[in-house]
Length: 231
Image 1 (cartoon, rainbow, N blue to C red):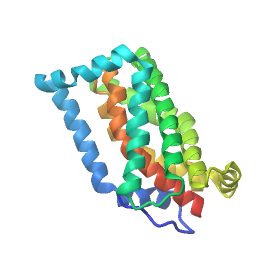
Image 2 (image 1 turned 135 degrees about the vertical axis):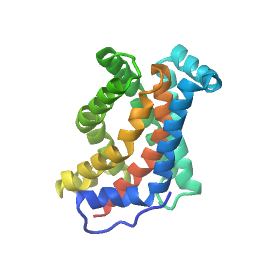
Image 3 (image 1 turned 120 degrees about the horizontal axis):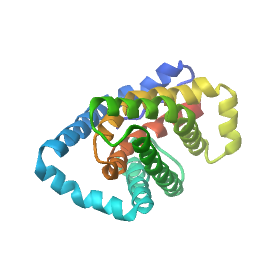
């Protein structure tokens, strides 16, 4: 994954697409892998059999499994990538790894509840209509009102050297343009196709597949935080 240089100007769309453009190849590959896995899960018995232990582990461990998945995929793995492979240089890498892992693990618990709520609202079917309803509610209600405001500020806070004062100052210089809208646009571009595939799985596998995609999303959020803080 390439890192975008931080600039002094840019519209929300330019800020968002700057990070997405640099990562368009792995992003499209990610969509392909998740979609192919969902199709294979329902059409190739061997694939469903291979994923059964993961589904059973989630079913038996509940919120603990959801926390562990996001802790590793969204926290530890992105941090290791940046430490040994990525081009985004960061101070206090171990502390950021720990905080990001705890933050993302906590969101794993939230999303486990949210997916259960979605199932209660729209059912557990895997038809096109159900997938569209769940995806739309996820991306146009839950994300703009809950996950994007919280996540965008968290990554901005980390990019600001753990300074709430600096993060708030960045927001005061234009929260919508610099922080919220770029994260929201990036979320829609990356997650609308991915979330539709996630909801195609059984509920106990959804949070596990989410962890796989979240690894990529965490890296994009780190880039957006750096770009917003530097403007």
